[in-house]
Amino acid sequence: MSFAARHTVEKIRPVTAAMRFPRSLTARERAALDFLLSADAPTVEALRIQAQSVRATGYCSCGCPSIHLQADSEQAPEAMERFPVISSVNDPGDGEDTLWLLLFTERGWLSFLEIAWIADHPPKEFPSPDSLATFSTPETD
Ligand SMILES: [Zn+2]
Image 1: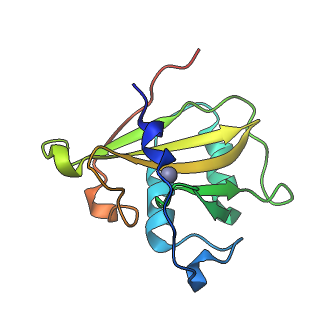
Image 2: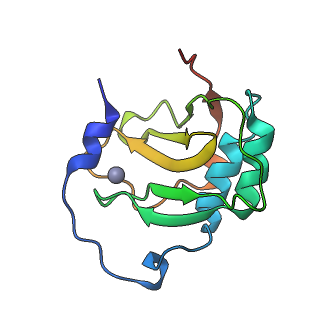
């Protein structure tokens, strides 16, 4: 099953200052990214350095708060290995509000910070930092 299917619903998003890209990450986006990068995983050190100067370059086209990322290659090293997708689960006891965070890299660079959900409607924003409780690093390849 694919949570990505949730991202196909077309939705018009009002234009606000926060939509002008590229921009710095919001506090919640930053907290979500830092949380995911707190995992003990291969090549995570390089990604933590990338995260210090990373910019958000656009929202997911479906209307959810997921953001595309662009690291500054002049200020950060390329990650040497493929980074596994890291997911977090918050409030796993509440099916309606359970969310996942996933971090994708592309060719060694941060590329997409995704939020996935199982409720009928996408969340309006990334979860508050204190709800980020657990994470796992699924095996890749
Ligand atoms: Zn989306």
